Length: 198
Length: 389
Ligand code: SF4
Ligand code: SF4
Image 1: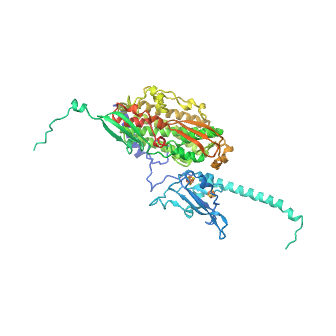
Image 2: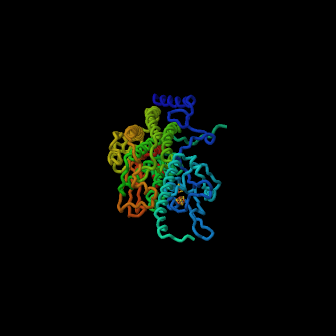
Image 3: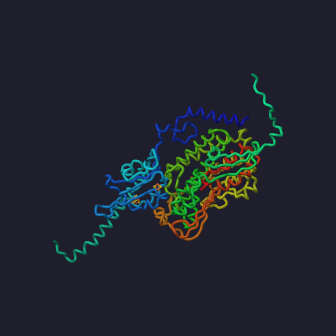
């Protein structure tokens, strides 16, 4: 009998504590109420939380970073990305996607597309409330639904954003420096045989 | 009007009742006791079980075949979905197999991070299994919710480091995906410090509870010989006294550096399985304490393979085969890989502890009542995602 009584004492203690102890949804203490009244109340978002991918653009929507290289579509384990490259009026391929569909019913939130993309164009979002009335159309997100600004990325994941921006800046500088050396190396050549200026 | 009088009332000693027909019942596939979609075809003599056939395959999703058509890294998120309670240890087993195949070294810090994550997973698993076992016993949801309160804290850590609470996809070949920040390390330390207090409370609630003792002791006894012969591993084998823990036997990763004991049971009944899990959690806490104290600074990813993690299709291990196994919370989880030198494994096989531990279910249940079958199943600790991979 003793064990049962002791157990009841513990449940009673926990029951009373839920009234006395402050509500700490994110606490590390034992006891108290730890649930939150979603959707009125929400837990703070974790920065590294990943859900569904989105495409970033710099500044304006035309400035989409994705160059339509198809790497993410190949690496995606369940193959839920579909990309068609854009072409200009003469049919020459452009470095941007015309169609970029992700089927969120198939996507398993693994984050491999983000890891694989060499152009920092696709990232994992925090958005999780994306219900739809049916599963054929409303959960296939098209290019324009997926586009979000870098500001949004900065807002949800400041640390990653800072690290990536720094790397991008360095890469850009390196590129510029490399180009400058190439130009510097290329410039003396046309100068030695003086070419007639038109 | 007087109530109708039955022509004959049956007594327990009546030969008619003693000579009952066997009665066939299907427990499941949608039965709360089966922890998922799993069916037990039970033949009953009165309330006593005379035959039990597990029927599985409701959650079969071709895991191995999918993995054979996938880049090596591409299977990593799929391993999360095997035993969805312990995605970190599943990742661990798979990463070990691939690292053996391609001979990849893992930096020191990453080894520690892996061990910390694997042991946290063990806490999560054992604490929820005990909660569910109590649910099966009829102690509805109080122990489960106490357990989930603690589990929640650990899942928060997983979310913080890996990005997802249950589908972590955290380990990479040659390291881990993201380093632990000091804040997270501090948080884990706090959890580890607070956990024994919870365990004491949990044990106070359960261990000496007479009802639990009566229901669990001498029920579903798994003898030592049967455990060995059937290849049972994990807490279930150790509850029967089989001293077999891969952390000691195989000494994979850096487990040889930590001091911890392997708790063993004597009888091998449901109660022993419960106790062994509690004691294992206490040992896991010891490992966690040591690991958190000793964890060195440094990179968490082998720089040679960091680039390969970015381009999974270019990762082509040399021809050969490898078997990576870890002591997952449910038992020995092994991944057998055969490479033919291309970007996809030629053969990929999972040794799932849930499946193999389940094979003795009939032996454990024979002669017991239906209600006992439910708790015996609960104490075996199966997860259908792994069972039906
Ligand atoms: S998160 Fe994973 S499943 Fe989803 S689109 Fe990216 S790679 Fe594909
Ligand atoms: S998102 Fe990245 S990987 Fe995918 S097509 Fe665009 S640039 Fe290539």
